[in-house]
Length: 347
Image 1 (tube, rainbow, N blue to C red):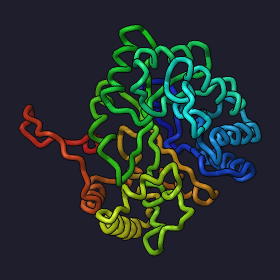
Image 2 (image 1 turned 135 degrees about the vertical axis):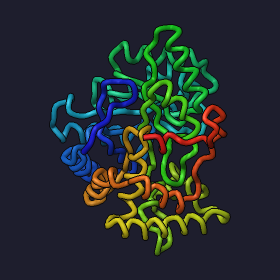
Image 3 (image 1 turned 135 degrees about the horizontal axis):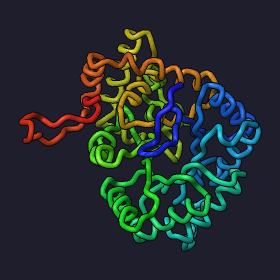
Image 4 (image 1 turned 30 degrees about the vertical axis):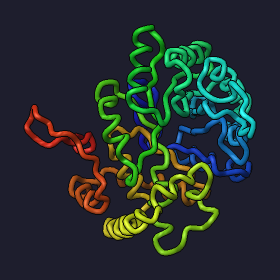
């Protein structure tokens, strides 16, 4: 396992982290957490509404970490606040969002479910346009000053709002966010590689990317069979990705990409899962990739991707780009009189 500093902080996280939000059985999760820890994974991600029912995954994770029976200093836990721990059909004010009230009450409830005194990282799971951004920043600063969390970050936020949050924190001497948790994979690149480029350059923002395997699409599992109805990509949390990759106008190209990646993986004496993960981790702006494997052998396979990172040479990158054909387009760099380049190319 390799470890990287999370953003502009002294916190070291394993480059593969674990988030088993789709495991609903306590014994199964206990085994996965133990396996992950034995493989060198030290970062476990959660959210207040993950699980078979909202809040249930935090309870399962809390029990699994107790069963792990290791020092609290030896692992990191994050959770995310925004959606609440209930999906009431009738709207109830203050049960969602990022108001100061919601942040404090939501965090306390999350800690109770996790059976922890604190989480290492607390995330704003979405941007909340209804709450003043200064209130959001002051709310997270309060959580950290009270010892409920050590660091805070954003998830799925627009770059301009992250910039605003950092500026407000600097102005009022509040604790700044150190990381963003965005979607990033071979099939979804624009935000991390283009939109956040200045954040990485100017603020050394960390990333804990989710769905690096595009909800299983990049594992190659669906290359030669139909997608099962109970697959992750058809789950309500990831249902939008089905249209993202398998809409009528996109399905043929997605199939072409995954089949060609499978062929390249065989040439490299590896498989599609490891190739997709190592490609994501090769990006200097990716701190850790969250995987949600449900079987020990799947988790072992994901961790083996770490061995492949250094084999993703510029020549292999060129081959992968030829397959993907989705590289973000950058403005012309007039200073150097050259086409703009992504940070992936500047290592």
